[in-house]
Each structure stands twice: as structure tokens, then as C-alpha cells.
Image (cartoon, rainbow, N blue to C red; front, side):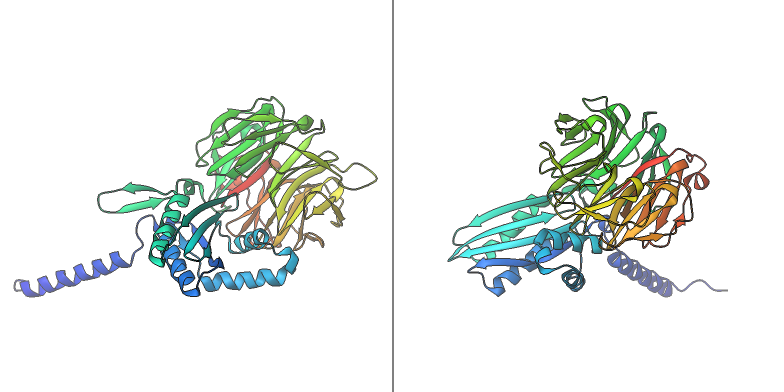
Length: 464
């Protein structure tokens, strides 16, 4: 047995180094998989703007956004947009409605759109960033600018509007948008301060809320989970794991909460409405009613809250207007409300369903059930409402509704959609999930975790 040939040993080492280098280069940069997805709408223009200039600026925009986002392929965006055009009537397909529908279908929160206005040698650039919660705009004006200077302007607009913080390590620069740390998480709240979280809708973890009061509502916005409950409490969390117990200026039982226009809006008993820009400091508003308010949602630039025989709307969350929900044999008791596909849908006692495109005029729909409907959501091109006796009813358009089999007779209290999954929660800690809203499977959290709960779960949300 002889000594190893040193020449062969060096060759093997050299090959291993090459292989390792290839693997490192082909692997994603640390933090890359955490980058959120975005759609880039083709550059729009007015006035004196050539197609060549538009394409150059769009290429620059794409290259800059690639530093912070994963870009949805243009072909994929155009395919989905074509589906939206087929689904909606021409007059229904406003910019906001169509873009929101594309976001929902692709399950992408971010959309960027660059507009160029040209007059002679002068140009104005407007970069718009649209998320499911808010819009941001940055504008710049350039007098006598050539395409090279406009490219620099585009880079500056991206830096201004995205506002990414850089974290430096020894060898790598990891870029991360702060609010992404709560992405892709389900959170459910319930009796006795119960809070559960899940990254997949299947395995759930109990969290410490810091209260034994009932929690009735939960929402997500601006990188923050905000819950509401008894005695005006509002637990908040930036990561879904650690929770801070906040309070409003009211001791009233709060039952619903939503986020829109940079504002959290909570509603509750005796017509109570409270608002907060950050989930910490709350201001009580005059709703104009003493009727109980159960839930609130935001869509189409409008807040809508529903309750016992009443529907209110607001453009800013501060000033509220009562709307006529229709003439019926009894005052309808609305228990849930959502917005999707250009439509508000509210549900309640004895299977009542009402729909509205603007929150002002409402139309009665036939749910096909007399069971109380307590929660409603929209996702994957489908409205899903849930309620007593395990009832689940779905509709693609808010008009025609079909009952589905849930496999349980337990009372459902809330439902949401996220990450390609419908999740509904309810009595005794029951949780059911469905990929399509039609076929459902049970996920009882107490059988999957030794620290599970048998408390009733009232609400559930998902951070996109």
C-alpha cells in the first residue's frame, strides 16, 4: 500500500473548490427568499414621451425594484389581467378595482406603477406603490432632462418610496423591509384572552396575550396585528408571538377591527367607534348611533361597519353616515362584513346576506339557509360565509350562494383567507381549513398541540 499521489490530491481539492463556488453562486443571497413579491404595471405616459424612453425607464425601474422584491413575470401578470377583464364589465374595471383583483388572484400584496408626463423637454415622473392596505406616491419634476437624467430620477423615486433599511454583515448586505417579519401568518383570537398563531393553518401555537378578557376581533395592517375585546382592550403585536396589552379611551366591549387608509378602526357595543394611526393611541369617534356594532371592513376607499339593524359608512373612519339596508319584516342583525371583487357583503341572523358595490345601496340575497351567519371573507375568487351548526356557504359573485359540507355541527365564528388557504374558527377551539372553499378538513388545535385550547375562537386574520 503506497502513499497517496499528491498531484491527484491537489486535483481533487481544486475540483471541490470549483464545485463549492458553483453552489454558492447558484444559491440565493441570504434574505433573498424573504423578499416579498411585486407586480410592475407597464409604464403609462401622457404627452411627449417616446416608446423607447418608456421602455428604458421601465427597465431601470425593474432593476431597482429587484433589489427589494421578487418580480412577478410580466406574462403571468398579463394572463391574470386578461382573466380579470373577462370577469368584470368594462365600466366596473376601474384602476383600483382591477389592480386589487389581480393582487387577490396572484396573492401578491405589492404593485408598482410609473407614470411619465412629458411636455417639450420637461418631464414629470410619478411612482405609485399600491398594497392591499394603502397607496404611496412619490413625484419628481425634471426640466430639460434627457433619458439618462430621468433614469437617475427613477432610482431616486424607488429609494424614497420603498425606504429599505440595510443591515451590514461581515461579507453580505442583507436588505429587508421591516414589516415583512409578520408576513404569512394566521392569527386567531377568542375567549379568555386566547391567541393562537400558525404559519400554515395546520399547526397552531398558543401565545400569551396578557389578559383573561374575551377577544372578539383581529386585523393586520402596517406591519402590526391589532386585536379588540372586552373593556376596550386592544392587544398588539409586531410579530404575532409577543403581545402588548393596549387600551382605548372606552371600557365598552369592542367586537370588530379593520385597517385602511393608514388607520385602525375598532367598533363595538352602544355604537362605539375608536380609531388609531398606530394601534397604541386611540380616539373615540361619534358614530351617530347607540346600536351595537359588530364588525367593520375597508374597501373601495370606504369603511363599512354593521350591527344590530344598522349599516354605517365613512370615507375617513371619523365621520359616519347611516345607510338604508332595506325594508324587511324585522330589523336585520348583521354579524359580519367583508369586501372583495368590488363588492361589500354583510351577513347575519337567519341566513341574511346583503351586498353593495358602494356601501350605500344594499341588495338582499338568498343564502339558502336560516342558520345564523357570523363571519364572511373573500379570496381565491370566492366569497365564503360561515356560522351556526357548521354552516358554510360560498359564492363566486355575491349573488348566487351554495351550501358546502364542513363535517361538523360546531358553531363557526370567523373566517379568513391567506396563503392559498381558507381558515374558519369557532366553538371549542375548532379550526377548519380548505384550499378551494368547497372541500373542508378539520384542524382541531388541541389535538395537535399539548398546550392547545378548548376556548371558543371568535376571529381570525392573515398577514399578507
